[in-house]
Image (cartoon, rainbow, N blue to C red; front, side):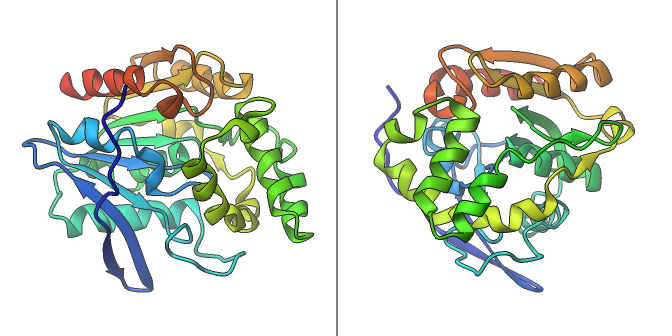
Length: 273
């Protein structure tokens, strides 16, 4: 079982046009770990990773701008992949981590992580992408799976919007079964979908992905929806040297469903970089 949870310390980094909220833990030597959450989440998403990674390393987890506790009105133009990546580069430099970090991104956060690696390769010592869902530029645009959720938000049906989104990415009836802290986090970030849809189908250039020079680990849940598997297959074709891990007994939220296996996979990977 994971260690008992305690609330992480909260920090605020002033940026030229706003603030970035983050938490950090650990004082281990060597390259730190940077955790990047996905849709409807914030740094609380990593509740079972922060203490495990902090045993041996410094671990940094931001809440992307526009997410809790940075309560803002959505939609907003600053809620964007490239903008998030720029914020995180600023954060690493502000924390005097000019040598970079082991960057881990989940879902939408995986696209942010990839953008960071492309924008500032010197800050990315390794890259771990957990169930990325982005489209490649040579692929056609696809229907936005959360378009119905966004419409429900606009109509005032926040709970229905959340249920549609969570059940689509994790499986039917997932939202109903989720624990209280997770539901609180998702409700706090529900409005971000109003901004996120403005960047729906934002593509990644295959040449940019293929040009990555840092070590790469690709992670999925054994029960993750098939669309995430197609993204990992394409990335592996572009970067055949990448490592791959399937987390047993888990779907899209594999770091919560099976944190012991997820943490072990990540720590084994970064230990050998």
